[in-house]
Image (cartoon, rainbow, N blue to C red; front, side):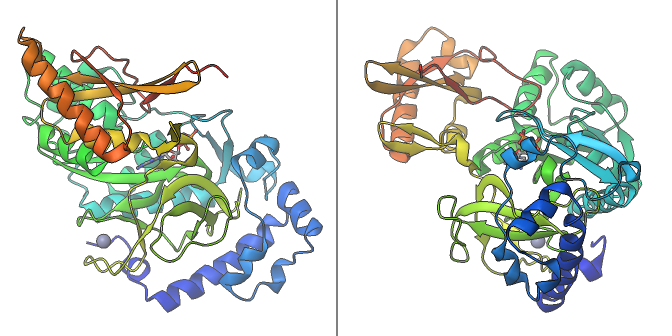
Length: 431
Ligand code: ADP
Ligand code: ZN
């Protein structure tokens, strides 16, 4: 059940010794890059002085803006000839960042991906349909290489084209898929349009990643398709997918600490939070040659899950990501994350597969309207039912976010749907 038992179940002490060894090598290498070379010189930091993992905290964090300023080659620690691959982020929050890999880096990433998928039970006999964008986005090639490494048959389907996806799934008896959660719900509607049952396929598990989603959303997807869904987390700056992944226990995501040094910091003070408290995930690459990144601020909020996982892996688990620090909405002085709304909605029977949060300014007040797709039975002419559901949704949301949102119910498939990461918020407030 382990891809690399020795690494996955390594005793903490040994794992930390490995981290320290790799950290030192990473810092030595990073010193060769223009960005870190300058940073180390400015802060009189000498990589050879590092004696413990704690010593890393003497260095400042690296941000997405640093990466943008270092565009395109400012973080390279090797000559250009040693690079074999480039990827970029999706550009969800501004200009995309680019990441470069040597042959070693691609090899190490592929191995991590194989480790993740093997952990959930993927084997040579599986047929794996990768419904992610290929190209610069990391979710395509990252998973592709990992599944090939295991020896599964890979269908590089790419994103979108729902009817063809369904056809491929049926014709080639796909057993495992990789899909964006919001798209998984959309795809199930297309099954319906074709008069097909999403449960009537050979797919037994799905890797759900690339965007925040709640436990309720996962359960809903699992229920609709009758498969097991595993949360997959990563970001291009740390290769892409393969950073943290759920094991069969589905109770937090094992974060691969042989490859990433993990810190959870208070996003305001940048001090470490107490073990188990929520904060921003900050990571340092420990096994990357081409473009080492030190103390990278992911902006993703999570916490360390306390205790040991029954699966025997010693790499710590993070809780599913709550969202990015930038995702936080402040409405009437209350802080709200879109995932809180998603979680409530996905737990309410009758609610459909999509929603949108619309923010507007009226005078000096900000207002929030939640547009919610509901199942078509509710549009059978009995307005009382619809109104009852609407009130119920308002109450549910209010109990979580503490303000009373406007709720508009709309028909299935009427809200904008992307093939990539869902856009949950439409902000119409003027600056
Ligand atoms: P961008 O940062 O431009 O979206 P990436 O494609 O590298 O570019 O996306 C990485 C980001 O996607 C992560 O930092 C995180 O915010 C989000 N993400 C990826 N996987 C998950 C997941 N399983 N749960 C929540 N958020 C995720
Ligand atoms: Zn586990």
